[in-house]
Length: 198
Ligand SMILES: C[S@@+](CC[C@H](N)C(=O)[O-])C[C@H]1O[C@@H](n2cnc3c(N)ncnc32)[C@H](O)[C@@H]1O
Ligand SMILES: [Zn+2]
Image (cartoon, rainbow, N blue to C red; front, side, top):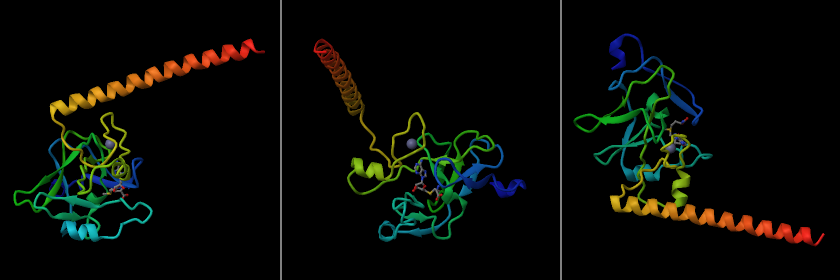
C-alpha cells in the first residue's frame, strides 16, 4: 500500500475533464497495486434512498459504493479521496473487497502511467425498472469505445439475446438506409419537377 513505500500516496485529486474533480496517478502505478481504500460511513440501502441529493444541481450525483454484504459505503460522510474517482466503462481500476467483506480497496487492473486518471466501473444497481429515462439520468460521459452510455449496470444478456439485439440493430440500420435512399429519390424528383416548371 502507498504509505509503506515512503514515496507518499499513489494518487492526487485535481479537476477532471470527465466530471468535476477526479483522481490521478501521481507516479506510475503497477498492475495489482492497492491504491487506496474506499472510506466512508456504512449505511443501509434504505438510508441511502432517504438521503437528500449531495448536489441539487446534479441530483443523480452519488458517493455511494455498494458492497456484497448489502451495505453501502457512503463516501460523502467521513470519506477520503477515493470518493472523487470517476466512472469509466473501460476502467483501469476496480474495487476489491477484504476477506471479511467490510472494506473495499481500489486496485490497479493494469499498469497505470503517471498522470492517468484513475477510473472504475460503478456498475450502479437501482431497484427501479431500467428505463431509457433512468439510463439518461445516470448517463456516462467516459468516451470509451465500449461506453454503454450509462453508469448503471446493464443486465447480462444470454448468447441468444445478444444475437437478437445485434439483429435488431442491423434491421434498424437497414431501415434508416432505405429511408435515406427514398428521401434522396424524392428530393431529386421534386427538384426536377420544380426545374421543369421554371
Ligand atoms: C463519486 S463521484 C466522482 C467525483 C466527482 N467527479 C465529483 O467531483 O464529485 C460520482 C459522480 O461523478 C459523476 N461522474 C463520474 N463519472 C462520470 C462519468 N463517466 N460520466 C458522467 N458523470 C460521471 C456523476 O455525477 C457521479 O454521480
Ligand atoms: Zn461510459
